[in-house]
Amino acid sequence: MRSQAHRNAYYQRARGSTVEVDNFIDLSAELGLVSEEDATACIDHCARLSYLLTRLMQIP
Image (cartoon, rainbow, N blue to C red; front, side, top):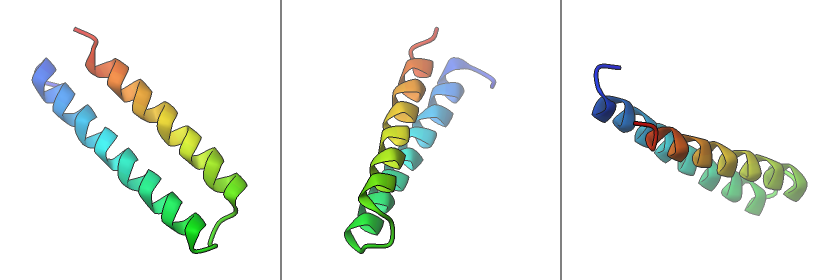
């Protein structure tokens, strides 16, 4: 990455995509396309990924 600003912009987009995936998982569970157990596991992974991306943005 060229600069911290470019890196953070990349991480912000990735975090936004994680939120989108989280929403699709919720919708899939509501429609009965995935089990609640699988949806919960995926949502937990999304939360962890979002946390890690946030921490990466805090590195100077």
